Length: 221
Image (cartoon, rainbow, N blue to C red):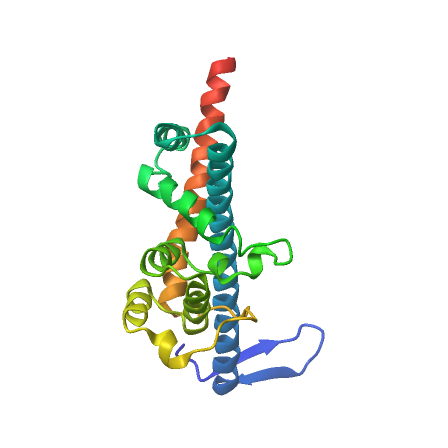
């Protein structure tokens, strides 16, 4: 703004309210902060729903394996059918569907009824952060520790891998018992990666659903 003052006239009064540039700058700063906070809340909420969906798909596969002896061929067929049903969506590749199965299998015993799913750190980090943790660590206590620390510090996947490789948990210690619900900073690498994974997913879901509805409509005409 070029003006030194922002003036706002009240039509019901003859007096004029004058806002200094310093006050205006603070108001703008506060609003920008609120917008960023709302953005990260929406992003992490979308990300959580995505992880819960992957959990459900993994759970379905594991249950079918136990009850109906599903093998690799059926899981591969499921992945192809999901890709066909949601063209361009992504996330349902053969490799990723098998990761969903592994995700549920890894934490099935951790997520007991006494704990709400959303309270576990795994549901509050981007999917490929989870993939790194599953692949690099075998101990669930260590997995919980790194997932929580990733949230608290807003680690990118690269940074997460670096800290796992350096065995940071051995230097800082202490198992995670109380899961922090603090959100990563909007500017953090984790927030940006969650925006790409979770936000992109929901845009694609809406588009895929729209195309499916149009296709079904043509079949009934």
